[in-house]
Length: 548
Image (cartoon, rainbow, N blue to C red):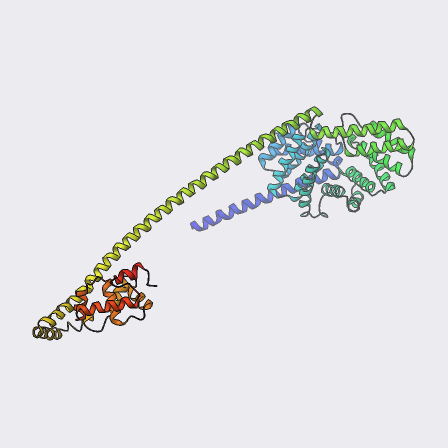
């Protein structure tokens, strides 16, 4: 029963989460639909939104209505911006409710306000905040739009490096976008990207169908026509460019674009040889440019064209004035890039050099400290290795000492072991020579107990004895037999017994021969190994290193 209850609870929770997720998706889709309606015809919704109470913004519904109304008014008149305080309040509500799409639209509107105010720092910050949200929701289209915005913003500030950087990033996200299914705003940004990359024909192919499919009430109608006119201008198709620019000139109320329209018409009419109209639009272009307006790239080309007109009309004074204007614009560009006057630029350059020198000094100190640390590390490692080698040497010496002590004990044990076996032989030998009868009886008695047969030294079994000699005296038996194959069995036995410490009398007793016979064997050995007369055979063999 408990299991069934738990199952019901789990299913209920899962369904609730699914319903909540579906509700969120439906709400986002409804918001996107409203944005699309505003873009297609901002007038159709502005009156409905005006009826909504937006004086106080206390909940998400009121914040959404205020945002939509602000967007519609800005689409109708690009100089109409909402109050930043109310927009900030909307952003807080959307952030708290985690409404990503509404946050992005609000931030986009904030960026337009900061752009109009010339507040570059806040404009950049706003777009970067929007990028964070777009990355969180993995909206490729939004990411393309905002990176395109940044690239367009930096081209206005003559910062080509940042323009190229953000345009490249925007193009990366463009690869994941289905252009056919994109909205008009995204397609216009793609067209602008094509113009930046000098793909003018592709820009025309993209813009022309859009210009034919949207109405004059569309929020981006003027932008589309303007970009299409610029595309024809870049292709040097003067007639289509003039027709489109004249059409949009009467439609667009934005003062920011007037200079672009007039300067473009000036160039087009000059190119087709209609100098009166070129002169007309030249004056309109100059009059439309206010001192407070920001510099644009097309101004440089415009005044160069004016200088060309003046030269063609042999008006030297006007040509000089136009060229001076070009120089002034270039100076303003340099000042804009440096962010201040020439003196400020020099001061900035000096500070930059001081900073570089400081950084170089810091790097030198860092390298010196690093080298010192490395030297100390090397010395420490060498010292540790030296100590280790010394410790290993001591350990090796100790092991050698223990081995020698063990060898000495082994030699003594071997000798005592062999002597123990030889002792029987010595006593038997003595008995044989002194008391033959008694010795005979003793031998018989020993034979009865198998004592003589088990003693290898009293028989011909010397292998065990040779094994002990090799084990105890560094393979002496093997070496002497290899180095001196001329030695016979008795001579080898004598050498082995000598190195084991046996005396001449003991050897004679073991062999049951006279001492004279043993001495005779020694003499024969000396001759065979080329040792001096009366020399110690073992000393000669070991000290002279005759054994290989």
